[in-house]
Length: 159
Length: 474
Image (cartoon, rainbow over all chains, first blue to last red):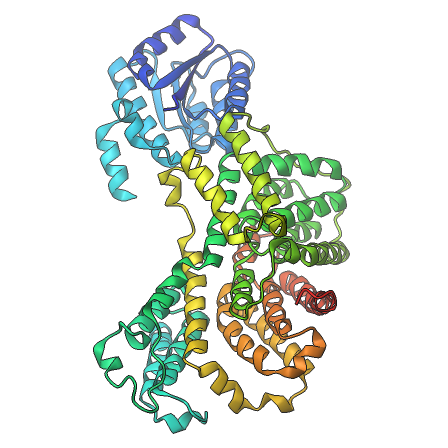
């Protein structure tokens, strides 16, 4: 089995650690990567993609120096290479306009406010991974332990 | 259901039923049998269904196969075969032969092509090649257009014309948005992709389904054209046609832009699986081109990537569901139709009674090509080939006069190439529809280019066929 990749992006190391800790239970089937800036994340994406790594989910903060989270997520959403990658925004400081952009342009899947509920974040990650696995055509049986059962049933019965 | 739709159903299924109940003498064909009458009914149904499309075109093919099994085969419905052996009943078809059309070697050749294309897309070989190949063409719009056309044509030789067009338009259309509102060049660019895809499809046996149908009929006449032999003539034809189309597009749709930049992101994947995809692609292509050396024909070679990609899980079972079974079935239905027409003896009987010996073969050739391109403009290229090829094959064997134009296979190739050149309307082919959907081309623009390219293409295809005949390929 090839591990799925989940990338967390935040300029504050303590937030990154907290997110990585909360989604830790996914580590059996996922490689969890941490990036401290949008640029770092985009470079990592380019590299991982060239290695053929399945990039399942990106959880990004919004307010970061240089490129902000919504800009980065919009770029990723427009990139044909990552059309099945799921995108989460996790922020305390997005304006109304940013949020509209995040939904309309970046098409984010979920929006979390800081401070988030760890269980909810983990649940939503499972759902997102499930959707990614089906959209990409991977074998869901290999990833079952980190997938969401109900979403799996729905996606099998609708395909 | 609207009245128009109901009428289409009534015509497509009513007329064939009527034909089933006509007396044999009504057909004016000497020696016609009951079995042949049923074939006529099925053929008429297929023709009407493919033209009027009351049901999706691939379902017509499935229906053809099933109806043949029920009505014509040795394991069909008892009531249809209780008179078998009686005078004037005709020949029952072997049910195995009909079912075998689903897995004919040509279908396997296409399946192999699908696997290659699918793996190339999955590991982004297509987009990355496009990026690299486009670079040398610089940033002058005219040169970029030529680059786009060359790349589209090369890809459509191995991938489906539709998939190639979609990929190239995805790269091109965002850039067209930056053109001035009234720039005619936009229409030229949008048209360049489907035109190149349609032309490119004629370059290899697996480029487009009509080519497969042609191969099948060659095979039936104990006459094979290998992958390399097809390409020796196909590629120069594509090159010349592309160049002409490019000149036409530049002439009709000049652009005021002095430069343009197509940005394609990404780099070549270098995981072991991706490298295996590149290697398999190259090896398969080489094996296709060197049939004479190793003895495997193109269908056998085509199954090698199927095995490699399955075993290595480059194409997994979820990907397997994405295979265009509809295209394979559409072609299989055409094979079944051809099988029934020739095996029941209808082909020979019908052509004999048409008295074609009196007609100049050149007129038949030109007529067949014109009929094919006209039909292909209004309906599916594959369905056109499915309908015309069995008739053309029957004519090909009975018409001795064709020998002076390069032999009996000439007419089959005429029909095949003409079928690929039908591209003057948005409904002509899926690539045309995709390009039209971008909104930069008027139907009249497409018609202008489509008709000109089609016309020139027909003339050049005659030249190509003549040269093939002269060098002993036919």
